[in-house]
Length: 294
Image (cartoon, rainbow, N blue to C red; front, side):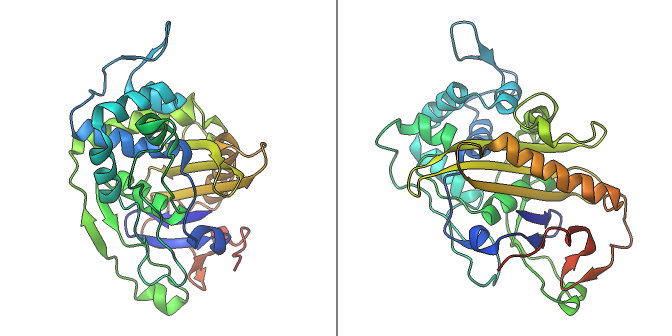
């Protein structure tokens, strides 16, 4: 699990640093955020356009994101083509280190060719060929949350580091503001009625996110992802990545994130504005129940 302040790129906590910092895993359906932004920015789909995905089924972007409809995103991938998909993935921070001087961090991987089996369709709906780290996904979600600024993630380790913290911008994304806005209803829909309903501990809170469920055949493990943020006065990004047996999936990951958000809310973290909670060792008290693992 990674928690990040989306307005500054400050890493609040990392649970299981070995998993978070190593070279990445198949992102599963979280790659659909990249596909969506590329398709909207390249005008190959409209946000309210229906695409038929079955004999009796069709989706707009919002319902396709909320329900994680694979045929819809395979269609977008084929409309975009390999070069545009990978170009937007690179712009959004995949395939490079998300952090600034975070010891041990390895970059993920952007595929150099479409997957042999399934082609662009499986690449843009399941993330086949990509390797993404939780830090990379946290940086991407942060940019969606804050309106298009990709920050270097920085992980202060002492109170002095916290006191002297200065945000550092990696780049401003070359994305239309309307595209960033247009994916948010689908991310909210995932929590309200879609694949991430377990995250919805309180309907009054605005949690937006995207789940991912698949198998990473490189390392023979089932994957469960949830990349999310809570929209409010102090927006925070929470990314959960699970590996394991068939019991692991995106909905389970969303439930874990929901428990984190609930804990934050109980400590009134979201309503604090001028003063932050007491912090020690660069990590807010609100996450001390989720211990750091080396």
